[in-house]
Amino acid sequence: MSITFRTPSRRQFALQAAAASLALLGTVPALAQTAFPTKPITIVVPFSAGGTTDILARLMGQYLSTELGQPVVVDNKAGAGGNIGGALAAKAPADGYTLFMGTVGTHAINAALYKKMPFDHIKDFAPLSRVANVPNLLVAHPAEPYKTVPEMIAYAKAHPGKINFGSPGNGASPHLSGELFKSMAKVNLTHIPYKGSAPAVSDLLGNQISIMFDNMPSVIPHVRSGKLRAIAITTAKRSPELPDVPTIAEAGVPGYEAVSWFGMFAPAGTPAPVLATISAALSKVLANPEVQKKISAQGGETVNETPAQFAAFIRAETIKWGKVVKESGASVD
Image (cartoon, rainbow, N blue to C red; front, side, top):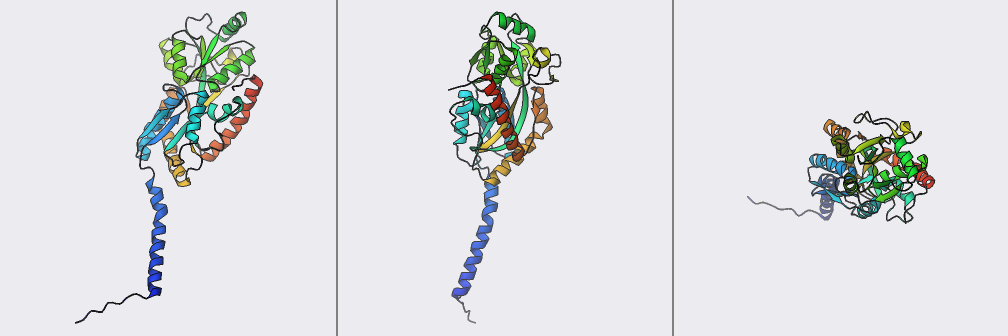
């Protein structure tokens, strides 16, 4: 018996080649979607370790690692009110492996406060979701002679410029909370900027500075231990975590309100499928009761929103805080 091999015609060969090409192209999107992530992800934090931005970033990183199946590390790049870290993240490769924990400072205040910005907070980032709203707490060293807002105002007016207030840096929410207080209470306080909340709190604990308007997670442990005195909270309502601490508005400065917020971003230009993967993982993390409980224990409120909702919120906050900066007269070269 003989066996005959037939050579395909040119037309048959072309059809087979085309079919193979289409089959290969059909697998590319699937491969692209399943390929991310294949290595560790970095969250850039624009303030030093130990502050609220750092605390929230590490909490998100811990749970995102579980959802994404890759290690998530935090890289602290402090300075210039968050602008150093912001510029680094904005210029990072847009591949999903660099994320940014932004704040009301980096993504609403700084654009109005700084004459020159190293990045565009709208154009250079892809918003993922707000993570938390956090009250600021007005705290003082126990050695200071005032225990209430009226007593502090009276002391500040009797000793102009003697009360020093520290902040995580120029343009950070605690800084603007202090500037707003100065403007509304008509007092002269001296601002001392630091490269993050942790070194500022350290100096406050050592009585090197008088007061801070700091994010609650950074100072609430020291209030509970008695190392710092809580004078008032910056939000319109009291915090369930410190129900006996009055708001600044009810304590003597009517209409006063300031809230810090924190959110996750990716560099602009990050592929849509990658953004979708990260966004879905982040949404699961923020819906986790354990995460919500941990944020609540720090005095914060968990926020879980879509990228579109977060983008709209940022635009509104930019307008709001731009007016506050203008009215306060605050400016940084």
